[in-house]
Image (cartoon, rainbow, N blue to C red; front, side, top):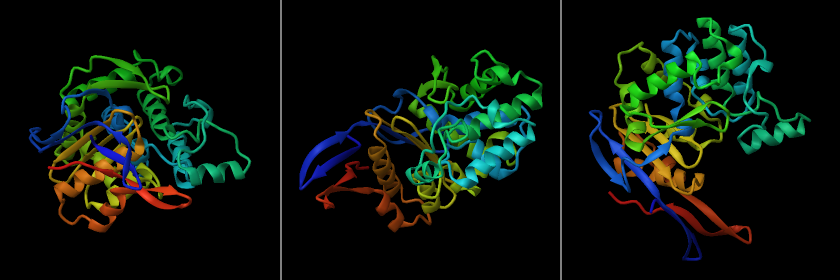
Length: 314
């Protein structure tokens, strides 16, 4: 059990799942559930996808490279960044094949609606990744109109990079919520993917991506997002959230963490991930910030009467 939902001392719900901590060599240091649990990485695979694009020739400044690996909130800085990526390829928003959506983060979504805007491909949280995919296609002379097809040269290059970074066979490939291919892998393989990136040679495609994410945590998520708060709370850490309760992160020394909450609840994912960081005690971590992330209030009549908190022990 990764976390519980309690009200007035009564445990009303529970979030079960799997989590693993690997050292820089890829050996299991701690685990809960099955460290080799087979799952879909969802958006936690975006650093691998971005690394494949850089290897294929994508050349963006660090802020836009961080946005290429993001699930952004839809804030003004994110939307402007997507336009900048598309501009490098001489393309417009109409080239994006993300489904029409509103910004992911509630505050950004409310501002969007209040401005009278409708759902659009730009507002979808994966538009940074898709813009980078289009820019990579233009750079390589690949057809941008079919960039989401699993047999497209871009998607084949991404699949090969995912295999190498996870050291996994990738037995299945599906379709993610944004329309791009999504890869099935072991939880330990997902953890390994960021560890090999942080330990890669400076300036290499993998290292460029994680260094860019580390330098721009607000572009990886957003001002009010837990993934950005985690990266600010732990110096040097790179983290990436994913749908259906997935999280992956790596510390400066190559120690990596991956998690999958079985019921997909983001609230369980956040508090359990915070608890794992508390157990690891990374050097320089903001203990108060992690404590705030490790517990979410449960309200009754508008006031706190319980909490969502993790039950994990070392």
